[in-house]
Amino acid sequence: MHDYFAGSTWSKTYGKKALPILVNLAENHKSTSYTELAIVMLKDRKYAHPLMSALGRLGHALESLNAAEPKKFGKIPPIQLLVCNESTGRPGNLALNFLGLKKSETDKMSKALLDTVVLRAHQSVFAYQHWHYVLNALGLKPATLELPPPETLLPKIGELEGKPKGEGEEHEKLKLYLARNPQVIGIDWAGNGDTERLLLSGDRLDISFQDDERWIAVEVKGKNSPIADLVRGIFQCIKYKVTLESQLRYEALEGRVHLKRIVPRVILACGGSLPSDLLAFARSQDVEVRSAVSMS
Image (cartoon, rainbow, N blue to C red; front, side, top):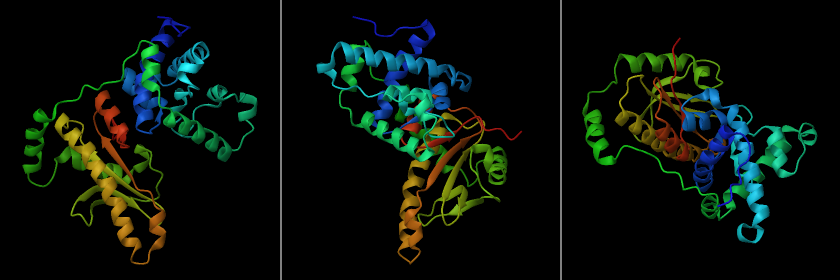
């Protein structure tokens, strides 16, 4: 089998390892960030910048495969562009070379135009139907996640549900700290969040930040939360996202039409580190995760 990956051993190795993960994201119509990918692949955010080189190698490998067998694969879109900068939501301008755009051109583009360019690139990646053939041609297998089996989790989650209200002093301290310091988990907000916000479903949000334009819910897990509680937290976030969307529609029918335009966000904030495979699963379900959150 021909090896289409050129370059240094490190970039080659992690370029190959990245592709199955990106295919999984593409099939779920998701993008990710350099930092999240570094945590999933190498369990350390410090590799976010070095991964750019590996993603470049991946892009060139796909171009080489495309050139070698154009009829078999059609036009293989640049899947590596699903990895974006956390602050801009776009890959670096240099990466847009894979769209035939020179950096001298993209540097002159407005943010709105760059957003449009990246959106179209992502749509082409999501629409491509032959990613598993591409994996096979490169000698790679689809990504699998090592997740704890439900039969071991459910009894422990049942025990957690049966405990009296309240999740301990550690959880309470982190909840109050994040309500007062939302910037720690990337929320730009003036003032404090509300804690224990009651929803129409009867659920309570650990922290809620809401105004006429945004609604951000935060589910908090302490530093020493067991795996079962972290898994439960992911599914709580999935439930809250749907519940918030439905409650906004309900309230909009009372005449507050502007609420229809709000797209709620739900964040899982963990005092400890979320295992990389759990992080990947959470991301595939559109759950934002902030792990290893510190109060210092």
